[in-house]
Amino acid sequence: PATAAAQEHGPTKRTSSLDSPAEKKPAPGEKVDSGAAATKKSGSWLSRGSNVLVGLFFVYVAFVANTFRTILWPKFPDIDPRTKRHIPKFQNVISEGDELTARIWVDEEAFPASKPALAEFNFKYQWEEFKTVSRKVNASISQERLKRSQNLFLSAQVSHAPSGRVVKATGGLVKSLLPPERAAKYHLPTGKLCPVDPEPAFGKAGHVGKGIPKMEVRIVFDTTAYPYPWKSRPWMPPVFVDEFWLTNDQLVRLNMTGDNLWESEVHFNLMGVARWRFQHHMEASLQQTAKMFGEDSEEMLQMRDLFANTHPYLLTATLVTSLLEILFQFLAFKNDVEFFQGVDAETLNKYVSVNSIIVGIVMQVLLTMYLWDESANFIVLATSVVSILVDIWKVFRAMRLEWRKKFGFLPVPVLVAKAKREKKEDFDGIAMKWLSVLTLPFIVAYAGYTLAYDCHKGWYSYFLFVAASCVYSLGFVLMTPQLFINYKHKTVAYLPWKKFVYRAITTFIDDLFAMIVRMPTMHRLSCFRDDVVFLVYLYQRQIYSVDRTRVFDEDGY
Image (cartoon, rainbow, N blue to C red; front, side, top):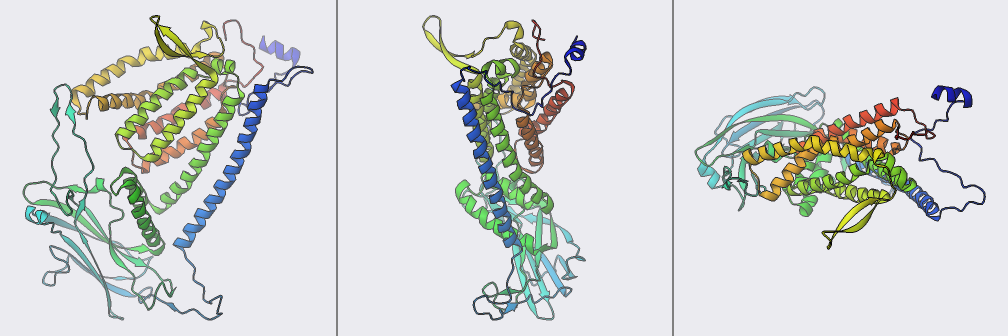
């Protein structure tokens, strides 16, 4: 029949699913809906405002890029622009290709004169030909030294024979840090406290000691000539024990009895001057950030781990994609709002899974509570809250809140669809009902298992943990009602595809962050789960023709 109709009346007009819903022009003399006009006007203002914000965003990106360029690769003029005189500059004492001598010790005192060095070697001050020198050492520290806060020292010395100049650096193999606040956990059925191994005190009051499994000794490779006041005479490049890359999860836990033994690796290598400037700048920035979030906060650990343990090329790609993610998140939000502003309630209730949005709000609230309980990153929490508010607004575009009395006297809030729909067309409700029946046994089984075998801070944390685990592991099920609605109607024309495209791009960017940013394991797995669902949406868009003039039969097919 469709083929015959096409032959009789010509091909059906097809419109792109990336377009906004078709607008009907009013007939002559027809009264224009003031609400639709207001929606169109607000959408126009939103579009203009978004264009301004995108322009400001690119200006900000250019400013940040230029700032980092001046930090990493500063330029010093040869002529003073005011006096027109030559500016004196001071060179590195070590010329490229000069031979240097390095000595490294690991002992209970720094630079022990009476003990042989762990390593003594010559090397050339040359970037291309330098090879990292590595040694392994069996570190040992007694309980008495821990109690007196006496460290094991790594000492490094680099000598330049032609000038007679020597540079030195020291570092400790035991790090003193404030332990994270950990609430006591219990086996809830029996009420027994789950044991936690204590750690030896070291350094400041309340701090504990942890062994460092890898030490990095670096000498900066720098051939830049600096004017005053950066330098006042010929200078030696800095040698330092680099702990910037070190995060708490890499440290060795020490015990409270007997001597502590662990293997530590010592590496000696060159560091590029641009990397050194960047690291020096980030250390200063992290110190300022520590005053806001705390030195051992989750935000600080994530930032330090990101900047220190990521390859420079991957770090650059991460910084660029993080800025792009902000842009695409904003564009997805803007197109999502425009879509829900421009679609009437009847279309939303028929072609969009509003029930999934409602359940998604509940899941987002549970996830936000879980992430807060787990001291997750502040940015992740803020993003979740904004997402919840936007979804609430989307629900009220299709539904309204009514108060109905239960038992004749108890008022209960109920969400009611703004547009009536037949029971046989309620594909959204059908999908949600069957999904609930299928997933409930798995939820009950997992809740019983973790209650019997795992430790929790309390019943509240147990509830959040189970809820969050189910959302992460079964969250993709929440996205299937929309797939079911698409399947039953055989169309994807009324979906916000611009928003889906932008959201898909941010999802793939999230995959990159999931590999390099510290986050709960379940949250990391959920990032990859969203990719699969989007691929299914793409498959449906490919097989279902986009035709807004389609007429459905009496059964809704």
